[in-house]
Image (cartoon, rainbow, N blue to C red; front, side):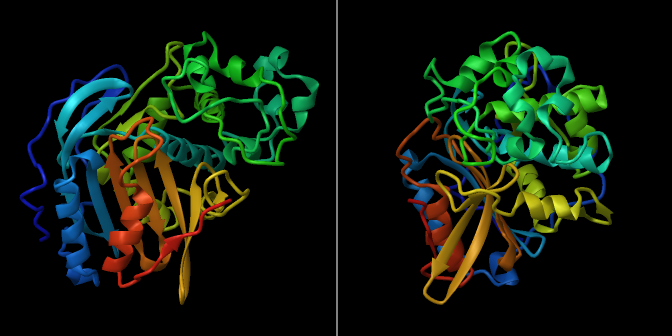
Length: 382
């Protein structure tokens, strides 16, 4: 069994639950098989060096790094550092495998999975459904020109709505903050005018997952945390989770979930295995393929799927597409399909423009070398 380095902290930290926190239930079925990296073909040395590097550089503020290879948990390291609970300062936290962490915008990828399940269950129409079909009760907020706006546009961040969302979420002019503070976030988003034609270009918009979450609640007639628990998290054996809500009471589908890194890895493994979990097709295979396929060129990566970012890495003799769920502060779930690998990273670098150690650098400098793929570099979008 892989032993966590002594420099990684294992002391449990008790974080008070808040509204929409769910206590653990008994997990059934799947349990992680924990192995040494070299038993699944990974070189231990680059991973050991990564642990040493993070442990001796507190400014990196990396909280955990996990690697799942061939369905086995092959590497797991936890650290300490300053953290937040959806903007509330927690001080210095010593992380371990039981400590829940903000997902921030990784929540968007979870929301997308729930949309895929709802469509498969016939609770929602397909991705070509339009805003007037989907939001009849908001007809007063839907201008005639929004009749061409579809569920697909919402999923791919190509809705074209006028939206200001800088990386600094302390900025009071940030439209996601303004939406969260509004009495009706759905009306706030639907009432935005168009900046571009739907489908023409990518524009990051935290209001779109809010629309997706509202559709889920209307489709199932229950709260979004119950939908997430019953349709996705409990079937994955996830014992408990937190789901923060904004001031209107609507869950923060764009950023409000908290899970442990191991539970994040379960979500990654579900996507790696094309939606199959043990003996059940939990998420439709075609939804996984569509989610992890670039639909539009994004601002920062080679492409964007259904609330998933897609990067392209290249070396002189090889290349690889790497989808990722991405959250403010350094939260990442990377899907490395050709390597049959999932990488999870959590960190506390919220609202920072220049992060000392990014998830991309961890892949390039540690994970790829551990897999024998030296020289892999991300191809940046101009």
